[in-house]
Image (tube, rainbow, N blue to C red; front, side):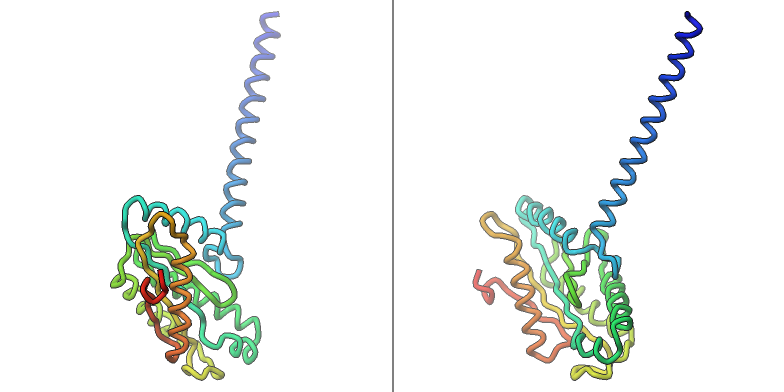
Amino acid sequence: QRIQLEKKSRELDAKVAELEELHQELEESNKKLRLLSMLDGLTNLPNRRAFDEFLTREWSRGIRNRQPLSVIIGDIDHFKNYNDHYGHLEGDDCLRKVAGALDNSLYRDIDIVARWGGEEFIAILPETDMQGAEEVARRMLDKVEELQIPHAHSSTSSLVSISLGIGIMVPREGLEPSALIHMADKAMYKAKENGRNRYEAGTEDAWGA
């Protein structure tokens, strides 16, 4: 009986170890699935869902620390014309290259750039003032130009270019993060109105906050 009991005990220990291993594998798989669900399939950048989560977290942190939060929204100039002329496969390749250029424009690990949708991208720069945000925006413009992607049907440039809008504010109670997005978006359309292939910066006074 003692021998049988020891045998059963060893079998039980083996089963427990096996279950623990399966549980660990399941947790790893779930973690990988979550990471995949947060990435844009084409550009491999964080997707809008990931960006929204990051923005919410950084907005709360900005309220606590009373530090400025900057957002840069970018839109590829005349991208519809690019797709129509070169085809959607080339268009996808262009999006991937621009995504990489924008990602390489960031200086810090805490900064992220995500695909906002279509040919739009968005970056969030925690604890960054206007001077820092403008420096990143200039770097983004330069990095996209360095790609030297021909754009025969652009009225802005012979190369693929991007228009950028900067929004910056110190997060505070009673104000939603969408106000910051709205500010950056409005600044981006101002950049388009002023000739594209440039950046414009929004202000709370101009936005009306």
